[in-house]
Length: 593
Ligand code: ADP
Ligand code: MG
Image (cartoon, rainbow, N blue to C red; front, side, top):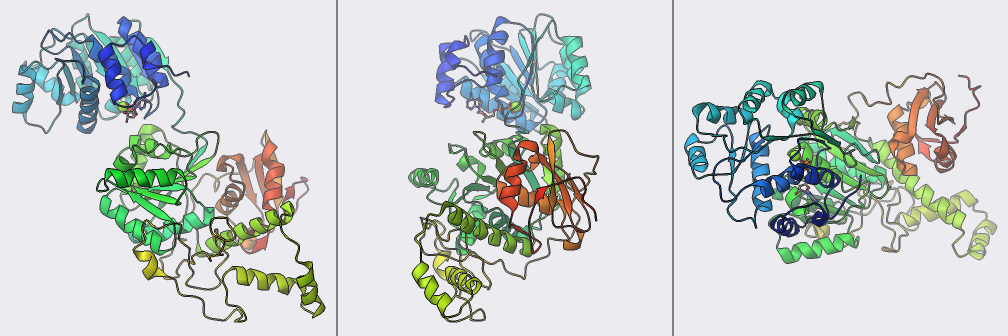
Protein backbone atom coordinates (compact mmCIF):
# COMPACT_ATOMS: atom_id res chain seq x y z
CA UNK A 1 0.00 0.00 0.00
CA UNK A 2 1.34 3.36 -0.96
CA UNK A 3 2.02 6.30 1.25
CA UNK A 4 1.67 9.90 0.23
CA UNK A 5 2.43 13.36 1.43
CA UNK A 6 -0.24 14.87 3.64
CA UNK A 7 -0.34 17.84 1.25
CA UNK A 8 -1.84 15.66 -1.46
CA UNK A 9 -4.87 14.56 0.53
CA UNK A 10 -7.07 17.62 0.41
CA UNK A 11 -6.62 18.74 4.02
CA UNK A 12 -6.75 22.35 5.21
CA UNK A 13 -3.63 24.44 5.75
CA UNK A 14 -4.28 24.34 9.53
CA UNK A 15 -4.40 20.56 9.50
CA UNK A 16 -1.15 20.37 7.54
CA UNK A 17 0.55 22.67 9.98
CA UNK A 18 -0.55 20.50 12.90
CA UNK A 19 0.67 17.36 11.18
CA UNK A 20 4.01 19.00 10.63
CA UNK A 21 4.18 20.09 14.23
CA UNK A 22 3.57 16.51 15.30
CA UNK A 23 6.50 15.42 13.20
CA UNK A 24 4.60 13.19 10.79
CA UNK A 25 6.55 13.21 7.57
CA UNK A 26 4.19 11.31 5.34
CA UNK A 27 0.71 9.89 5.61
CA UNK A 28 0.49 6.24 6.58
CA UNK A 29 -1.19 3.89 4.09
CA UNK A 30 -4.54 3.94 5.91
CA UNK A 31 -4.39 7.73 6.14
CA UNK A 32 -3.56 7.99 2.46
CA UNK A 33 -6.44 5.72 1.60
CA UNK A 34 -9.24 7.08 3.77
CA UNK A 35 -8.70 10.83 4.22
CA UNK A 36 -9.73 11.91 0.69
CA UNK A 37 -12.78 9.62 0.80
CA UNK A 38 -13.90 10.88 4.20
CA UNK A 39 -13.55 14.44 2.94
CA UNK A 40 -16.00 13.68 0.09
CA UNK A 41 -18.62 12.88 2.72
CA UNK A 42 -18.98 9.19 1.98
CA UNK A 43 -19.35 6.55 4.72
CA UNK A 44 -16.13 4.62 5.21
CA UNK A 45 -15.20 1.30 6.75
CA UNK A 46 -11.49 1.39 7.47
CA UNK A 47 -9.56 -1.65 8.49
CA UNK A 48 -5.90 -1.70 9.37
CA UNK A 49 -3.69 -3.05 12.08
CA UNK A 50 -2.94 -1.55 15.44
CA UNK A 51 -0.44 1.27 15.30
CA UNK A 52 -1.12 2.11 11.67
CA UNK A 53 -2.35 5.64 12.42
CA UNK A 54 -6.11 5.25 12.36
CA UNK A 55 -6.69 8.07 14.85
CA UNK A 56 -5.24 10.76 12.61
CA UNK A 57 -6.88 9.07 9.62
CA UNK A 58 -10.32 9.94 10.94
CA UNK A 59 -9.47 12.89 13.20
CA UNK A 60 -7.88 15.08 10.53
CA UNK A 61 -10.85 15.11 8.14
CA UNK A 62 -13.24 15.25 11.11
CA UNK A 63 -11.57 18.41 12.41
CA UNK A 64 -11.70 19.96 8.95
CA UNK A 65 -15.41 19.27 8.79
CA UNK A 66 -16.14 21.19 11.99
CA UNK A 67 -17.83 24.51 11.48
CA UNK A 68 -15.99 26.66 14.02
CA UNK A 69 -18.69 29.32 14.00
CA UNK A 70 -21.27 26.89 15.25
CA UNK A 71 -21.33 25.51 18.80
CA UNK A 72 -22.67 22.10 19.73
CA UNK A 73 -21.68 18.54 18.93
CA UNK A 74 -20.82 18.01 15.29
CA UNK A 75 -18.55 15.00 15.58
CA UNK A 76 -19.05 12.03 17.88
CA UNK A 77 -16.24 9.54 18.37
CA UNK A 78 -16.98 6.27 20.17
CA UNK A 79 -14.09 4.47 21.87
CA UNK A 80 -14.07 1.24 23.88
CA UNK A 81 -12.29 2.47 27.03
CA UNK A 82 -11.72 5.67 28.93
CA UNK A 83 -8.00 5.40 28.32
CA UNK A 84 -8.56 5.31 24.60
CA UNK A 85 -11.10 8.11 24.75
CA UNK A 86 -8.54 10.26 26.55
CA UNK A 87 -5.82 9.29 24.10
CA UNK A 88 -7.96 10.07 21.10
CA UNK A 89 -9.05 13.37 22.65
CA UNK A 90 -5.41 14.29 23.17
CA UNK A 91 -4.56 13.48 19.58
CA UNK A 92 -7.59 15.47 18.38
CA UNK A 93 -6.44 18.42 20.48
CA UNK A 94 -2.99 18.29 18.92
CA UNK A 95 -4.30 17.93 15.40
CA UNK A 96 -6.75 20.81 15.92
CA UNK A 97 -4.05 23.03 17.39
CA UNK A 98 -4.08 25.57 14.57
CA UNK A 99 -7.78 25.44 13.94
CA UNK A 100 -9.13 28.21 16.18
CA UNK A 101 -12.48 27.67 17.79
CA UNK A 102 -12.51 23.86 17.73
CA UNK A 103 -13.18 22.35 21.15
CA UNK A 104 -12.95 18.68 21.95
CA UNK A 105 -14.32 16.95 25.02
CA UNK A 106 -13.70 13.47 26.34
CA UNK A 107 -16.65 11.88 28.12
CA UNK A 108 -16.37 8.62 29.98
CA UNK A 109 -17.70 6.73 32.94
CA UNK A 110 -16.11 7.43 36.30
CA UNK A 111 -15.66 11.12 35.64
CA UNK A 112 -17.99 13.63 37.29
CA UNK A 113 -21.13 14.48 35.35
CA UNK A 114 -20.79 18.10 36.46
CA UNK A 115 -17.64 18.52 34.48
CA UNK A 116 -19.09 16.83 31.44
CA UNK A 117 -22.24 19.01 31.56
CA UNK A 118 -20.04 22.08 31.68
CA UNK A 119 -17.98 20.93 28.72
CA UNK A 120 -21.08 20.21 26.68
CA UNK A 121 -22.66 23.50 27.63
CA UNK A 122 -19.52 25.31 26.58
CA UNK A 123 -20.21 24.07 23.08
CA UNK A 124 -17.68 21.33 22.39
CA UNK A 125 -17.95 20.32 18.76
CA UNK A 126 -16.02 17.06 18.94
CA UNK A 127 -17.08 14.66 21.69
CA UNK A 128 -15.04 11.56 22.31
CA UNK A 129 -16.47 9.01 24.67
CA UNK A 130 -17.30 5.51 25.75
CA UNK A 131 -20.69 4.21 24.57
CA UNK A 132 -22.20 3.72 28.04
CA UNK A 133 -21.68 7.26 29.26
CA UNK A 134 -22.59 8.79 25.89
CA UNK A 135 -25.87 6.87 26.02
CA UNK A 136 -26.42 8.27 29.48
CA UNK A 137 -26.00 11.82 28.30
CA UNK A 138 -28.27 11.24 25.35
CA UNK A 139 -31.00 9.93 27.63
CA UNK A 140 -30.56 12.82 30.05
CA UNK A 141 -30.79 15.26 27.18
CA UNK A 142 -27.41 16.78 27.98
CA UNK A 143 -25.92 15.47 24.74
CA UNK A 144 -27.82 17.04 21.87
CA UNK A 145 -27.16 15.62 18.49
CA UNK A 146 -29.17 17.82 16.18
CA UNK A 147 -26.04 19.36 14.69
CA UNK A 148 -24.21 16.07 14.34
CA UNK A 149 -22.51 15.56 10.98
CA UNK A 150 -20.15 12.72 11.63
CA UNK A 151 -20.11 9.61 13.84
CA UNK A 152 -16.93 7.59 14.18
CA UNK A 153 -16.61 4.17 15.77
CA UNK A 154 -12.98 3.63 16.74
CA UNK A 155 -11.90 0.09 17.55
CA UNK A 156 -15.33 -1.19 16.69
CA UNK A 157 -14.29 -4.81 17.18
CA UNK A 158 -13.17 -4.13 20.69
CA UNK A 159 -16.31 -2.24 21.59
CA UNK A 160 -18.41 -5.19 20.55
CA UNK A 161 -16.13 -7.54 22.46
CA UNK A 162 -16.74 -5.42 25.50
CA UNK A 163 -20.48 -5.75 25.25
CA UNK A 164 -21.34 -2.29 23.94
CA UNK A 165 -23.45 -3.56 21.09
CA UNK A 166 -26.79 -2.38 22.45
CA UNK A 167 -25.50 1.03 23.47
CA UNK A 168 -23.96 1.50 20.05
CA UNK A 169 -27.18 0.52 18.33
CA UNK A 170 -29.14 2.97 20.44
CA UNK A 171 -26.71 5.77 19.76
CA UNK A 172 -26.70 5.11 16.02
CA UNK A 173 -30.48 4.97 15.96
CA UNK A 174 -30.65 8.31 17.73
CA UNK A 175 -28.46 10.39 15.42
CA UNK A 176 -29.73 12.46 12.49
CA UNK A 177 -30.23 10.53 9.28
CA UNK A 178 -27.98 12.92 7.40
CA UNK A 179 -24.86 12.04 9.32
CA UNK A 180 -21.75 10.47 7.81
CA UNK A 181 -20.67 7.25 9.50
CA UNK A 182 -17.14 5.86 9.82
CA UNK A 183 -16.14 2.49 11.21
CA UNK A 184 -12.56 1.79 12.19
CA UNK A 185 -11.39 -1.56 13.31
CA UNK A 186 -8.37 -3.83 13.21
CA UNK A 187 -10.60 -6.82 12.46
CA UNK A 188 -14.01 -7.23 10.82
CA UNK A 189 -15.93 -9.97 12.57
CA UNK A 190 -19.49 -10.82 11.57
CA UNK A 191 -21.09 -8.66 14.28
CA UNK A 192 -19.45 -5.51 12.93
CA UNK A 193 -20.43 -6.31 9.39
CA UNK A 194 -24.02 -6.59 10.61
CA UNK A 195 -23.80 -3.18 12.26
CA UNK A 196 -22.33 -1.69 9.12
CA UNK A 197 -25.07 -3.15 6.96
CA UNK A 198 -27.72 -1.81 9.25
CA UNK A 199 -26.45 1.71 9.73
CA UNK A 200 -24.11 2.57 6.85
CA UNK A 201 -25.12 3.75 3.41
CA UNK A 202 -22.99 2.47 0.57
CA UNK A 203 -19.75 2.70 2.54
CA UNK A 204 -16.33 2.60 0.92
CA UNK A 205 -14.54 -0.46 2.30
CA UNK A 206 -10.90 0.31 2.70
CA UNK A 207 -8.57 -2.32 4.01
CA UNK A 208 -4.86 -1.89 4.40
CA UNK A 209 -2.87 -5.03 4.92
CA UNK A 210 -0.82 -4.98 8.04
CA UNK A 211 2.90 -4.74 7.88
CA UNK A 212 4.04 -4.09 11.40
CA UNK A 213 1.66 -6.38 13.13
CA UNK A 214 2.25 -10.07 12.77
CA UNK A 215 5.25 -9.14 10.71
CA UNK A 216 6.63 -12.57 9.96
CA UNK A 217 10.11 -11.12 10.06
CA UNK A 218 9.71 -10.41 13.76
CA UNK A 219 9.98 -13.60 15.71
CA UNK A 220 7.87 -13.02 18.82
CA UNK A 221 8.33 -15.09 21.91
CA UNK A 222 7.20 -14.75 25.48
CA UNK A 223 8.66 -16.25 28.61
CA UNK A 224 7.01 -16.82 31.93
CA UNK A 225 9.56 -15.61 34.42
CA UNK A 226 9.48 -15.09 38.12
CA UNK A 227 9.96 -11.39 38.86
CA UNK A 228 13.20 -11.96 40.74
CA UNK A 229 14.68 -14.03 37.95
CA UNK A 230 14.11 -11.57 35.16
CA UNK A 231 17.63 -10.26 34.97
CA UNK A 232 19.05 -13.75 34.89
CA UNK A 233 16.62 -14.71 32.15
CA UNK A 234 17.55 -11.58 30.22
CA UNK A 235 21.27 -12.19 30.28
CA UNK A 236 20.86 -15.82 29.35
CA UNK A 237 18.80 -14.88 26.32
CA UNK A 238 21.29 -12.22 25.29
CA UNK A 239 24.12 -14.70 25.59
CA UNK A 240 22.43 -17.60 23.88
CA UNK A 241 21.48 -15.47 20.90
CA UNK A 242 24.64 -13.45 20.96
CA UNK A 243 22.68 -10.20 20.68
CA UNK A 244 24.63 -7.00 20.37
CA UNK A 245 22.13 -4.32 19.50
CA UNK A 246 18.76 -3.97 21.16
CA UNK A 247 16.37 -2.06 23.37
CA UNK A 248 15.18 -3.31 26.72
CA UNK A 249 11.87 -1.73 27.74
CA UNK A 250 11.04 -1.15 31.38
CA UNK A 251 7.92 0.34 32.86
CA UNK A 252 9.46 2.81 35.30
CA UNK A 253 12.43 5.11 35.65
CA UNK A 254 13.58 3.30 38.76
CA UNK A 255 13.44 -0.02 36.97
CA UNK A 256 15.48 1.46 34.11
CA UNK A 257 18.16 2.68 36.46
CA UNK A 258 18.34 -0.54 38.39
CA UNK A 259 18.46 -2.74 35.37
CA UNK A 260 21.03 -0.60 33.56
CA UNK A 261 23.29 -0.71 36.59
CA UNK A 262 22.82 -4.38 37.04
CA UNK A 263 23.60 -5.14 33.43
CA UNK A 264 26.66 -2.90 33.48
CA UNK A 265 27.84 -4.74 36.56
CA UNK A 266 27.51 -7.98 34.65
CA UNK A 267 29.66 -6.61 31.90
CA UNK A 268 27.14 -5.59 29.26
CA UNK A 269 27.58 -2.29 27.48
CA UNK A 270 24.39 -0.42 28.25
CA UNK A 271 22.92 3.01 28.66
CA UNK A 272 19.52 4.24 29.66
CA UNK A 273 16.87 6.70 28.64
CA UNK A 274 13.94 7.90 30.69
CA UNK A 275 11.98 10.98 31.64
CA UNK A 276 14.41 12.23 34.27
CA UNK A 277 17.29 12.46 31.87
CA UNK A 278 18.00 15.94 30.56
CA UNK A 279 17.40 16.68 26.92
CA UNK A 280 21.08 17.21 26.29
CA UNK A 281 21.98 13.92 27.86
CA UNK A 282 19.19 12.19 25.93
CA UNK A 283 20.51 13.46 22.64
CA UNK A 284 23.95 12.21 23.53
CA UNK A 285 22.67 8.77 24.47
CA UNK A 286 20.58 8.45 21.32
CA UNK A 287 23.38 9.60 19.10
CA UNK A 288 25.74 7.13 20.69
CA UNK A 289 23.25 4.31 20.41
CA UNK A 290 22.71 5.01 16.72
CA UNK A 291 26.44 4.75 16.23
CA UNK A 292 26.34 1.50 18.14
CA UNK A 293 28.54 2.97 20.82
CA UNK A 294 26.96 0.53 23.24
CA UNK A 295 24.89 -2.62 22.94
CA UNK A 296 21.66 -2.23 24.84
CA UNK A 297 19.47 0.73 25.56
CA UNK A 298 17.33 0.38 28.65
CA UNK A 299 14.35 2.69 28.20
CA UNK A 300 10.80 3.58 29.06
CA UNK A 301 8.20 3.87 26.30
CA UNK A 302 8.01 7.62 26.51
CA UNK A 303 11.76 8.10 26.44
CA UNK A 304 12.20 5.81 23.46
CA UNK A 305 9.50 7.52 21.43
CA UNK A 306 11.73 9.98 19.68
CA UNK A 307 14.38 7.42 18.91
CA UNK A 308 14.64 6.73 15.21
CA UNK A 309 16.52 3.48 15.31
CA UNK A 310 14.77 0.61 13.65
CA UNK A 311 17.34 -1.99 12.77
CA UNK A 312 17.60 -3.56 16.17
CA UNK A 313 18.38 -7.24 16.52
CA UNK A 314 16.08 -7.58 19.46
CA UNK A 315 13.50 -5.79 21.54
CA UNK A 316 13.05 -7.04 25.07
CA UNK A 317 9.85 -6.30 26.90
CA UNK A 318 11.43 -6.64 30.29
CA UNK A 319 8.23 -5.22 31.69
CA UNK A 320 4.98 -5.68 29.86
CA UNK A 321 3.80 -2.62 27.90
CA UNK A 322 0.53 -0.94 28.86
CA UNK A 323 -1.40 -2.05 25.85
CA UNK A 324 -1.21 -3.91 22.59
CA UNK A 325 -0.45 -0.71 20.72
CA UNK A 326 2.61 0.00 22.80
CA UNK A 327 3.62 -3.59 22.24
CA UNK A 328 3.42 -3.21 18.47
CA UNK A 329 5.29 0.08 18.61
CA UNK A 330 8.04 -1.43 20.66
CA UNK A 331 8.57 -4.47 18.50
CA UNK A 332 8.24 -2.47 15.30
CA UNK A 333 11.79 -1.30 15.91
CA UNK A 334 13.19 -4.63 14.96
CA UNK A 335 12.84 -6.80 11.89
CA UNK A 336 12.94 -3.94 9.42
CA UNK A 337 14.43 -3.78 5.97
CA UNK A 338 14.01 -7.45 5.28
CA UNK A 339 16.15 -8.43 8.23
CA UNK A 340 14.77 -10.79 10.79
CA UNK A 341 14.22 -9.44 14.27
CA UNK A 342 13.28 -10.80 17.63
CA UNK A 343 10.85 -9.60 20.23
CA UNK A 344 11.13 -11.25 23.62
CA UNK A 345 8.55 -10.53 26.29
CA UNK A 346 8.67 -11.42 29.96
CA UNK A 347 5.51 -12.06 31.91
CA UNK A 348 5.21 -12.76 35.63
CA UNK A 349 2.16 -14.04 37.42
CA UNK A 350 -1.07 -12.56 36.21
CA UNK A 351 0.63 -10.56 33.50
CA UNK A 352 0.23 -13.67 31.40
CA UNK A 353 -3.46 -12.93 31.31
CA UNK A 354 -2.81 -9.35 30.23
CA UNK A 355 -0.55 -10.53 27.43
CA UNK A 356 -3.16 -12.99 26.27
CA UNK A 357 -5.57 -10.10 25.98
CA UNK A 358 -3.10 -8.21 23.79
CA UNK A 359 -2.70 -11.28 21.66
CA UNK A 360 -6.42 -11.52 21.20
CA UNK A 361 -7.10 -7.87 20.50
CA UNK A 362 -4.22 -7.15 18.22
CA UNK A 363 -4.07 -10.67 16.78
CA UNK A 364 -0.45 -11.02 17.66
CA UNK A 365 1.51 -14.14 16.98
CA UNK A 366 3.60 -14.76 20.04
CA UNK A 367 4.71 -18.19 21.07
CA UNK A 368 5.85 -19.37 24.44
CA UNK A 369 9.30 -20.67 25.16
CA UNK A 370 11.34 -21.61 28.18
CA UNK A 371 14.31 -19.62 29.34
CA UNK A 372 17.49 -21.32 28.14
CA UNK A 373 19.21 -23.53 30.66
CA UNK A 374 22.76 -22.93 31.85
CA UNK A 375 23.93 -25.74 29.59
CA UNK A 376 22.32 -24.12 26.62
CA UNK A 377 24.00 -20.82 27.43
CA UNK A 378 27.33 -22.57 27.70
CA UNK A 379 26.79 -24.42 24.50
CA UNK A 380 25.77 -21.26 22.68
CA UNK A 381 28.95 -19.50 23.75
CA UNK A 382 30.96 -22.41 22.58
CA UNK A 383 29.17 -22.33 19.25
CA UNK A 384 29.75 -18.63 18.80
CA UNK A 385 33.43 -19.16 19.31
CA UNK A 386 33.46 -22.18 17.08
CA UNK A 387 31.88 -20.23 14.25
CA UNK A 388 34.23 -17.36 14.65
CA UNK A 389 37.16 -19.72 14.48
CA UNK A 390 35.79 -21.51 11.46
CA UNK A 391 35.08 -18.23 9.67
CA UNK A 392 38.61 -17.11 10.35
CA UNK A 393 39.96 -20.39 8.98
CA UNK A 394 37.73 -20.20 5.91
CA UNK A 395 38.63 -16.63 5.19
CA UNK A 396 42.30 -17.50 5.71
CA UNK A 397 42.87 -13.96 6.91
CA UNK A 398 45.51 -14.61 9.50
CA UNK A 399 49.23 -14.54 9.61
CA UNK A 400 50.79 -17.99 9.43
CA UNK A 401 52.58 -19.02 12.59
CA UNK A 402 54.21 -22.14 11.19
CA UNK A 403 57.56 -21.51 12.79
CA UNK A 404 56.21 -21.39 16.33
CA UNK A 405 53.82 -24.26 15.76
CA UNK A 406 56.54 -26.41 14.24
CA UNK A 407 58.70 -25.77 17.25
CA UNK A 408 55.95 -26.97 19.57
CA UNK A 409 55.22 -30.01 17.40
CA UNK A 410 58.89 -30.86 17.32
CA UNK A 411 58.92 -30.84 21.08
CA UNK A 412 56.21 -33.48 21.01
CA UNK A 413 53.05 -31.52 21.87
CA UNK A 414 50.01 -32.85 20.02
CA UNK A 415 48.35 -30.29 17.74
CA UNK A 416 45.06 -30.63 19.59
CA UNK A 417 46.74 -29.68 22.87
CA UNK A 418 48.39 -26.70 21.26
CA UNK A 419 45.02 -25.45 20.04
CA UNK A 420 43.36 -26.07 23.39
CA UNK A 421 46.08 -24.13 25.17
CA UNK A 422 45.63 -21.23 22.78
CA UNK A 423 41.90 -21.16 23.33
CA UNK A 424 42.52 -21.26 27.04
CA UNK A 425 44.75 -18.19 26.78
CA UNK A 426 42.20 -16.47 24.58
CA UNK A 427 39.59 -16.99 27.24
CA UNK A 428 41.78 -15.03 29.57
CA UNK A 429 42.93 -18.13 31.40
CA UNK A 430 46.15 -17.72 33.38
CA UNK A 431 49.33 -18.66 31.57
CA UNK A 432 50.97 -21.75 32.96
CA UNK A 433 48.22 -22.12 35.54
CA UNK A 434 46.27 -24.94 33.99
CA UNK A 435 42.55 -25.59 34.12
CA UNK A 436 42.24 -25.71 37.87
CA UNK A 437 43.70 -22.31 38.57
CA UNK A 438 41.38 -19.86 40.28
CA UNK A 439 39.64 -17.67 37.74
CA UNK A 440 39.76 -13.94 37.83
CA UNK A 441 37.19 -12.12 39.97
CA UNK A 442 34.67 -10.00 38.17
CA UNK A 443 35.21 -6.28 38.35
CA UNK A 444 31.81 -5.59 39.77
CA UNK A 445 32.82 -2.57 41.77
CA UNK A 446 34.34 -0.85 38.80
CA UNK A 447 31.39 -1.55 36.58
CA UNK A 448 28.84 -0.63 39.19
CA UNK A 449 28.98 3.06 38.58
CA UNK A 450 29.32 2.56 34.90
CA UNK A 451 25.73 2.26 33.82
CA UNK A 452 26.71 4.42 30.93
CA UNK A 453 30.21 3.15 30.45
CA UNK A 454 31.76 2.40 27.12
CA UNK A 455 31.51 -1.21 25.99
CA UNK A 456 32.44 -3.07 29.10
CA UNK A 457 34.04 -6.42 29.31
CA UNK A 458 31.96 -9.34 30.29
CA UNK A 459 33.88 -10.79 33.13
CA UNK A 460 33.75 -14.27 34.36
CA UNK A 461 33.25 -15.43 37.88
CA UNK A 462 33.51 -19.11 37.18
CA UNK A 463 35.44 -21.44 34.96
CA UNK A 464 35.12 -22.60 32.29
CA UNK A 465 34.10 -19.36 30.77
CA UNK A 466 33.67 -19.70 27.08
CA UNK A 467 35.32 -17.13 24.99
CA UNK A 468 33.13 -14.07 25.05
CA UNK A 469 31.46 -12.51 22.09
CA UNK A 470 33.86 -9.63 22.16
CA UNK A 471 36.90 -11.82 21.80
CA UNK A 472 38.98 -10.73 18.88
CA UNK A 473 36.59 -8.00 17.82
CA UNK A 474 38.00 -4.78 16.52
CA UNK A 475 36.44 -2.80 19.30
CA UNK A 476 38.16 -4.78 21.94
CA UNK A 477 41.40 -6.38 20.97
CA UNK A 478 41.83 -7.81 24.45
CA UNK A 479 39.84 -10.99 24.59
CA UNK A 480 37.33 -10.83 27.40
CA UNK A 481 35.65 -13.87 28.80
CA UNK A 482 31.90 -13.93 28.64
CA UNK A 483 29.97 -13.75 31.86
CA UNK A 484 29.24 -17.05 33.37
CA UNK A 485 25.75 -17.10 34.74
CA UNK A 486 25.58 -17.98 38.38
CA UNK A 487 24.26 -21.29 39.47
CA UNK A 488 22.14 -20.21 42.43
CA UNK A 489 19.36 -19.00 40.20
CA UNK A 490 16.00 -20.72 40.19
CA UNK A 491 15.19 -23.45 37.83
CA UNK A 492 13.62 -22.30 34.58
CA UNK A 493 13.60 -25.71 33.09
CA UNK A 494 10.47 -26.88 34.80
CA UNK A 495 7.24 -26.56 32.90
CA UNK A 496 6.59 -27.98 29.53
CA UNK A 497 7.37 -26.42 26.23
CA UNK A 498 4.09 -25.71 24.66
CA UNK A 499 5.29 -23.95 21.58
CA UNK A 500 4.00 -24.87 18.19
CA UNK A 501 6.88 -27.13 17.32
CA UNK A 502 6.23 -29.53 20.13
CA UNK A 503 2.93 -30.61 18.74
CA UNK A 504 4.06 -30.76 15.16
CA UNK A 505 3.37 -34.24 13.98
CA UNK A 506 4.84 -35.60 10.89
CA UNK A 507 2.57 -35.91 7.94
CA UNK A 508 5.18 -36.67 5.36
CA UNK A 509 7.24 -34.09 3.56
CA UNK A 510 5.59 -30.73 3.26
CA UNK A 511 5.64 -28.88 -0.01
CA UNK A 512 8.43 -26.32 -0.29
CA UNK A 513 10.36 -27.95 2.54
CA UNK A 514 13.43 -30.15 2.53
CA UNK A 515 13.82 -32.72 5.26
CA UNK A 516 17.17 -32.66 7.00
CA UNK A 517 18.71 -35.42 9.05
CA UNK A 518 20.27 -34.45 12.38
CA UNK A 519 22.43 -36.85 14.33
CA UNK A 520 20.81 -36.13 17.70
CA UNK A 521 17.63 -37.60 19.07
CA UNK A 522 15.75 -38.60 22.16
CA UNK A 523 18.79 -40.23 23.64
CA UNK A 524 20.43 -36.79 23.70
CA UNK A 525 17.28 -35.34 25.29
CA UNK A 526 16.82 -32.82 22.50
CA UNK A 527 13.52 -31.00 22.26
CA UNK A 528 11.99 -29.35 19.19
CA UNK A 529 12.69 -26.01 20.85
CA UNK A 530 16.41 -26.89 21.00
CA UNK A 531 16.44 -27.59 17.30
CA UNK A 532 14.50 -24.52 16.25
CA UNK A 533 16.46 -22.33 18.65
CA UNK A 534 19.74 -23.62 17.34
CA UNK A 535 18.83 -23.24 13.69
CA UNK A 536 17.40 -19.75 14.17
CA UNK A 537 20.25 -18.72 16.43
CA UNK A 538 23.09 -19.90 14.22
CA UNK A 539 21.65 -18.97 10.84
CA UNK A 540 19.93 -15.79 12.02
CA UNK A 541 17.00 -16.77 9.85
CA UNK A 542 13.50 -16.43 11.31
CA UNK A 543 12.30 -19.45 13.23
CA UNK A 544 9.46 -19.98 10.78
CA UNK A 545 11.78 -21.42 8.15
CA UNK A 546 11.55 -24.58 10.22
CA UNK A 547 8.55 -26.83 9.62
CA UNK A 548 7.74 -30.15 11.20
CA UNK A 549 10.26 -31.74 13.53
CA UNK A 550 10.28 -35.43 14.15
CA UNK A 551 12.47 -36.64 16.99
CA UNK A 552 13.58 -40.28 16.91
CA UNK A 553 15.71 -42.21 19.35
CA UNK A 554 19.03 -41.45 17.68
CA UNK A 555 18.21 -38.87 15.08
CA UNK A 556 15.81 -36.09 14.24
CA UNK A 557 14.15 -35.20 10.95
CA UNK A 558 13.67 -31.51 10.48
CA UNK A 559 11.77 -29.85 7.66
CA UNK A 560 13.40 -26.65 6.53
CA UNK A 561 12.34 -24.23 3.81
CA UNK A 562 13.80 -25.64 0.61
CA UNK A 563 16.00 -22.79 -0.51
CA UNK A 564 17.61 -22.44 2.92
CA UNK A 565 18.26 -26.15 3.45
CA UNK A 566 21.82 -26.15 2.15
CA UNK A 567 22.64 -23.03 4.14
CA UNK A 568 21.29 -24.63 7.29
CA UNK A 569 23.37 -27.77 6.70
CA UNK A 570 26.51 -25.68 6.22
CA UNK A 571 25.92 -23.43 9.19
CA UNK A 572 24.99 -26.15 11.63
CA UNK A 573 27.79 -28.53 10.80
CA UNK A 574 30.04 -28.75 13.85
CA UNK A 575 27.60 -26.86 16.08
CA UNK A 576 27.03 -28.54 19.39
CA UNK A 577 23.62 -29.49 20.67
CA UNK A 578 23.32 -31.21 24.03
CA UNK A 579 27.01 -31.95 23.93
CA UNK A 580 26.85 -33.62 20.52
CA UNK A 581 28.57 -32.13 17.48
CA UNK A 582 26.10 -31.93 14.60
CA UNK A 583 26.67 -33.46 11.17
CA UNK A 584 23.43 -32.57 9.42
CA UNK A 585 22.61 -33.78 5.91
CA UNK A 586 19.67 -33.90 3.57
CA UNK A 587 17.58 -36.90 4.61
CA UNK A 588 17.49 -39.80 2.19
CA UNK A 589 14.11 -41.09 3.30
CA UNK A 590 15.65 -44.35 4.48
CA UNK A 591 16.49 -43.25 7.99
CA UNK A 592 15.89 -45.95 10.59
CA UNK A 593 15.96 -46.01 14.35
P1 ADP B 1 -4.02 2.92 15.47
O1 ADP B 1 -5.22 3.64 16.01
O2 ADP B 1 -4.14 2.53 14.04
O3 ADP B 1 -3.65 1.74 16.31
P2 ADP B 1 -2.69 5.33 16.19
O4 ADP B 1 -3.60 6.27 15.52
O5 ADP B 1 -2.83 5.18 17.66
O6 ADP B 1 -2.80 3.89 15.53
O7 ADP B 1 -1.23 5.76 15.79
C1 ADP B 1 -0.12 5.13 16.29
C2 ADP B 1 1.02 6.10 16.48
O8 ADP B 1 1.52 6.54 15.24
C3 ADP B 1 0.64 7.34 17.26
O9 ADP B 1 1.69 7.61 18.17
C4 ADP B 1 0.56 8.42 16.20
O10 ADP B 1 0.85 9.69 16.74
C5 ADP B 1 1.59 7.96 15.21
N1 ADP B 1 1.30 8.36 13.84
C6 ADP B 1 0.09 8.41 13.25
N2 ADP B 1 0.21 8.79 11.97
C7 ADP B 1 1.51 8.98 11.73
C8 ADP B 1 2.27 9.40 10.58
N3 ADP B 1 1.70 9.67 9.42
N4 ADP B 1 3.61 9.48 10.72
C9 ADP B 1 4.19 9.19 11.88
N5 ADP B 1 3.55 8.80 13.00
C10 ADP B 1 2.22 8.70 12.93
MG1 MG C 1 -6.51 3.39 17.52
